[in-house]
Image (cartoon, rainbow, N blue to C red; front, side):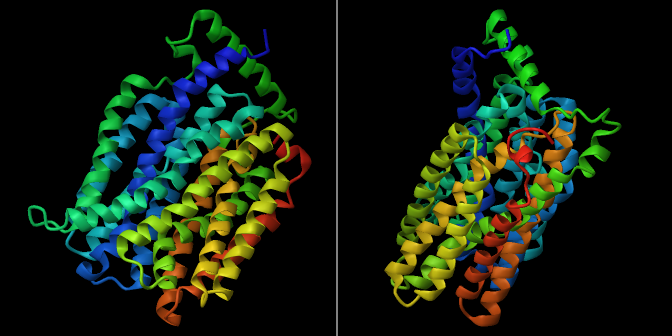
Amino acid sequence: MDTLDPGVERKVKFRLLPFLFIIYFVAFLDRSSITYASLGGMDAELGLTSTFYGFIAGIFFIGYFLFGVPGNMLLEKIGARKWIGIILLLWGTVTVATGFVHSAIALVILRFLLGVFEAALFPGMTLITTYWFVSAHRAAAVAMFMVAPPLANAIGAPVAMTIIDYVHNFIGLSGWRWLFIIVGLPAVILGLITFKYLDDNPTKAKWLTSEERINLVNALDADKLKTSSNHGVVESSFKSAFKNRKVWIVTLMNVFYVVGLYGITFFLPKIISSLITSASDIQVGMLTAIPYLLGAVSLVVTAKLSDKLQKRKIFLISATLLAGVSLIAVSVFQSIPIVAFLFIILGTIGVYAWSGPYWAISTQLDPRIAAVGLGIINALGNLGGFVGPYVVGSLKDITGTQMAGVVFLAVSLILAGLITMFLKEQDTNGGL
């Protein structure tokens, strides 16, 4: 039987997606904690300029770029359970170690290593969805763990600033150091749990009955036939992925989008602080939570709508235009803080509305090149995560204001939307 039993799909969702959400939530806490550490005294203690802070925030993505493709290939070879468990242990240890750095160079090295160890996580999780979910339902599936980043920032912002303020100087360590130690430990614990909890694919899922496993495998196999290429044999997964037109369009979209996404991620509290100068650090953390919470809502809503309508391009173009235009409006209305803050909210909603439809398109690759293709898309795309923070930090040092960087991020997001127009209909509804 090739039709997936809805009861089996629900069982898979409840077993897999909450766990992937928790892993990605912790991963994003670890990578974004530097944002709040910067506000909480790290820059002053280590003597960092805005440019160098942007470089340190972005160096994560150089490690991410270098190890994204090989990491994803290792995941496919070793299996999701072992590989994700190992990298959780490694990046958790690196995050804890960051709390003990005493030089900018040590911080650069650890941020680079964090990128190395997290590199295979997100493309690995999207690859895992191809093992467990049919293509028509992947946007909603991806959205269930993609909602982790905005929620991690929404919850993490006020909590991080509270830790920095109230755990400051406990046993002689600054509050920002305790932040890294506290957020790093859950990754280590999750790594140990992963070895027991996660299954590599449906055939190894003992929590499904034999009939349920057969139903799921048959439905997935039938779905793969729709998305597999009918243009001959794949001679080499890497060579075929590298020559694939859709892989490069989707990668380029991701580059410009990620410039905007991580420029916002690593500078949003600083932007809000520059607009509302009377706010305390904890108040800035609470204000930062608002756009991220609404961004999380927009992510889930647009993912479900794009699955229901099976229309991806219109959501992607609309989301990036909303984000870009709103960020330009932030710079225009910077002298009216409440209006500028409202546009920050709209911009963040647009940024996160992109995720579900985008990754639904990205996972509709020929299954024979999916592991390598997703590695290329994520690794090269995330180079934008270096460019965004570094350019925003540099523009702050050059101009003395955050607004030049905000406009730069707006332009990058609009370009991501314009590149989307080059996708063909078969690119968004199956096929290569």
